[in-house]
Length: 433
Image (cartoon, rainbow, N blue to C red; front, side, top):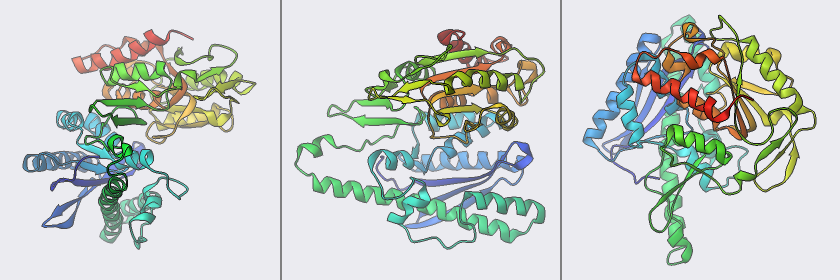
């Protein structure tokens, strides 16, 4: 975890997934320390134009603060904020270079990863509302959680009462303040651990890294050895999957944790073993929903539920169950289509919905038939982050399901060419199964 800096920013976003069938990031909230006191800033994005302006204002604000405080970091909890920023920059076509620079400079720090990887807690989950029990008084706001925030925003869309926005802002302020207090609490725990092990072998090896690696796999763990070399372990995924993600996103720097090479699936058909698979499905005229892909996935899953097994990292064998299978897609419309076709108990959703969750086998359904049917732009469908997150959810096998014509899209820029090439590279490595 980085050293604290005077200009540090504590950041939380609120989004409405139901707005205009595409979702809206309607509040960018941040707390900064001004004259030693926390100061809250609410940047609203109450419609599509405001959302774009809010993104620009936030990125510009961080950039301006970095010129004043070069060592600052932007702290958040779980990956939602970074994922949303990348999606918005691509969708609106603005501040992409500035955001990319922040990501490459590792400005964003996900405190969820620090908490999850460094401690066991006496709470049923690692949500920030549960972790708050250790460092913060119980909240007393009208809006109690993210779901309630969405409901309140939907009410504001109908009623346009300023008091509703005030209540949402109060909730977001508490989230930002909680992130600040969590950072400080973690620093106190680190100091206590240092005093406890001072002068021992444990103290020599127990180092909390100064630079938190970002954008290197949802479950990547960074360790700093005595010589200062940073090791990166993609904890859950099989080495064959980690190798592709590493090649695609991280210049070959990402590895897999010991024992993950034992992970594999034994099943009838082509979905045995481990690694990448490509399931091409022919269809035409599909934009955001493909029943053909849903049917193909359902057919592929059927033999997995009739006697298939998986082997874990310890070498133990288990029966493959519905909860061991995850189906992801970029589009809400395809989620509904999948739910209509898949067997009971199979999880299906957008990539963003299942951030942080894993499965023994993950299917990624792209749904769009060809370049002519892409509903938004090439950058949205082929975003490197989206398939990266989807693929890295898989412990044993990752299956790409798409129309072969998506591999033949006519790119209009070097960036688009690179994005499409990533899909082609997956198909090349995986082969047809």
